[in-house]
Amino acid sequence: LRHELFRHWPARPWVIAHRGASGLAPENTLTAFILAVEQGAHGIECDLRLTRDGHVVICHDASVQRTTNGHGLVHEHTLAELRLLDAGYTFTTDRGASYPFRGLGLRIPTFEELLAALPNHVVINAEIKSAPWDPADRQRGQAIAERVVALVRQRPDLRARLLVSSFDAAVLDTVRRLDPELAVALCTLPLAPLPEQLRGTLERGYDAFHPMDVGFDQHGAAVIAAAHEAGVPVNVWTVDVPDRAIELVALGVDGIITDYPEATRHALTRA
Ligand code: G3P
Ligand code: CA
Image (cartoon, rainbow, N blue to C red; front, side, top):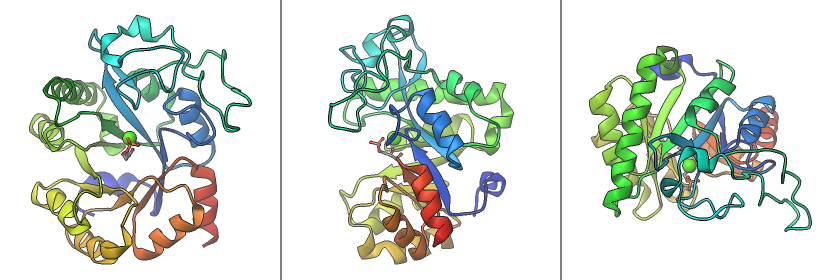
């Protein structure tokens, strides 16, 4: 693989916990990330957003509504305001019969809190949220990119563990411009044929390709071969059926991004 970073990572296939072990604990909370590590995930994936007062926090949606007891947009809240929200409030695995994480003190973490909580061996796939069709959101994406690069400058040990990803190529290009050594990955949606999705990654010289597992099989093998030819690993999201993870790895996929790291790891170990 082209980027040196991957030489420090565990042997493939990588199991990367999507928003932490988010099938079993509230997504993007320290509880879900630590659980993923305990379950043997090689890495965690997390979503980065900017608060009104310029802090980088971990939250998938633009709004806090789906995952907390609050309302409104992340970027309309200060960090102090976000800290008051219960990030375990809406999590249920029994369609609302119970909410086992309510009132336990789970919070929206900052990116720095996550970095402090993770053991040193854990790989971090930090996805910078930025909506290319929304100039203001894009500006926040750029600001997050700047802060992530600044953080890495303070903590060079992160270099061997951190893969910055985004759906917005402009964000990755900013990371590249500010820190050409930092590894970046392009996430894609199946809006174009898979070979075309990969082309963006290869032409822009990104280090990894993160396609969605929808319609992947049609061109999957050829695209994996082309990516590998260029030294670029292919990490597919979000794969929650262990047998599907086995199929993808048999096809040559390098990493599985999943809400269920333990089940995925067990399946891949058995296969
Ligand atoms: O980074 C891969 C995946 O997390 C992208 O989708 O919507 O879960 O952030 P989403
Ligand atoms: Ca994500």
